[in-house]
Length: 236
Image (cartoon, rainbow, N blue to C red; front, side, top):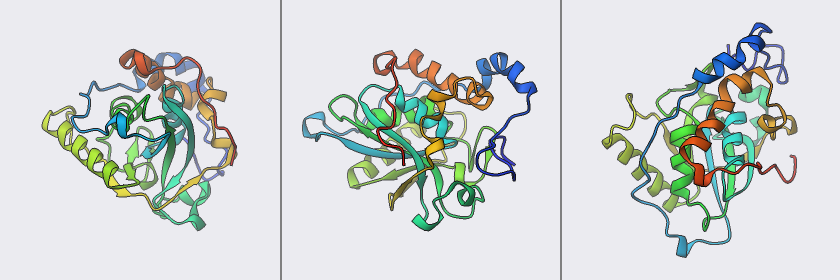
């Protein structure tokens, strides 16, 4: 059973009250970041258009969305589901782990300010741990898998090359388990999931598992950190 959810339904995601008192101490060690090299293969900025989209899965979408909301060059980030059918893209169904969906984020970014490769560098460094198979921290199940959903051949090539580069550099103590899958569709999550980290900074799960990611983003990528997060323009 995940610490984020139980059989009580989709909006509970409660942590026992005692964690509220422990949260400040636990947050300092809940999430560690890994310093990784910049991708050797990336898209040329000169050939970039007005905006591009990346879809990534790395555990709870609250935290991953939050990371990119504080990243410069990002125009919009939505929490949602990818990997399964539209008919099963609801939180209760995805939570069973039997829909093929992963909790994901759709990142719309300006490629002249931040490249797809730089988006991936933040993903592997601070947004999640790419060595955890079908889980992320306290959350267990295929819906929490590490996955990059590529929209075209260029994204596929950059993602696969970067994973190979990180493996050869032995950037992580354990093997990278991140999947690189074709993007078949992205379906926005329910409205109460959007901007969750920004609107609920004292929520115990956020304090323990996700706020350290924002701290790590600012520490490791100061030039790409923004103080004011970008919020979802339109709630689903």
